[in-house]
Length: 463
Image (cartoon, rainbow, N blue to C red):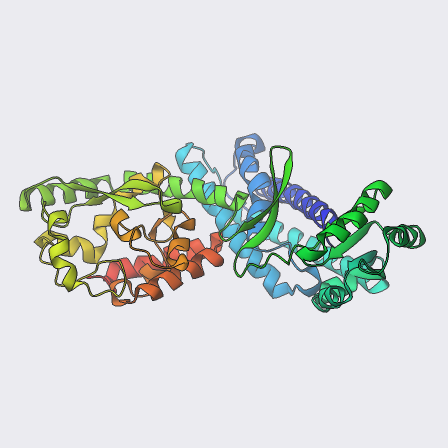
């Protein structure tokens, strides 16, 4: 499926899955509610209306989290094991949203037995729905019901290259009814082909030198009321992914080299703030204890503030527990020769500016705790490329180093769980950040967060 049809099918499946989630939850509550009469449970539970708040989480966020894990992609090649893994990862994210909603909004989950029952029912219904959908899709694909006739227009060489690039799914879904060589055939011949084959779209391929001829043929499609699809691969990009947007009433072709605005990114932002707020509340005693130790062991402020490069290089004030002497910034140039990193970032395990308590705070990463305020203020994320001081950002020498600024900076990242200070090559650090940016997902964030815990607890790679 291509284009709008694919989008509509995705939306339909998400609506069906949302309804299945609601039905599974109602069924789980009903079974638990009636279980007392059937002697399955010893105690009764509150009526369904006391649980309805969960529907406001499950119905909208469930399908969104499943989509973020790729649950609705590539139905022709999906295996049951892959579907189960994607569903499980999506369910984990939904569970975290439910836990956060329950904590912050003071909402009670009266019976713990309802949730495992719901999980079993929901997984069974959604996986069954998916298996039925996949079987129907494969059957229609095999019968040719999904094959869409299209006309291909362009130069001979471009049309051959375009057809050779078809994926296995596209080969099964697209039938090229006729090819029109725009260099040799007139717009009138395209009109005849449109009438003969009754296609719904014409796909135009060609380089920028053919845009004049292509425009004439596209105008014919406009008059005939047929969709004209223009391949823009003559605009070569190595990393950026093409997308469409609007600037006022003007259509724009957009090339993005970082994750674009999406529900997944919105969920990431909400999740970041929720976890940061919970962490600040739970560890407020630790904040106070560290502040007192710093105050009584070293003269100067408790909190260190420094201008760092945020998303797209926009400066912001990062907050950290102070681990150095108060005039550390003034000594920076004198200690440049001690830099153990290859690149603009300064790292040294023999930095004389670090205080006694500062060394412990750095090794345990406790000096990073105040950055939870940066997360709540929206300047940072829990997971993302580590922000560097502005004076180090100004020393960036390559476009790759600049591209690590395309996502909001984080408290932890791939570099953090891959050795931290043991990684002395700045290029390797940048490569890890770009790997994160190019492959970002909510599941990737969760894996990095979980892997950060033992790294912090045992101080691996910290100096």
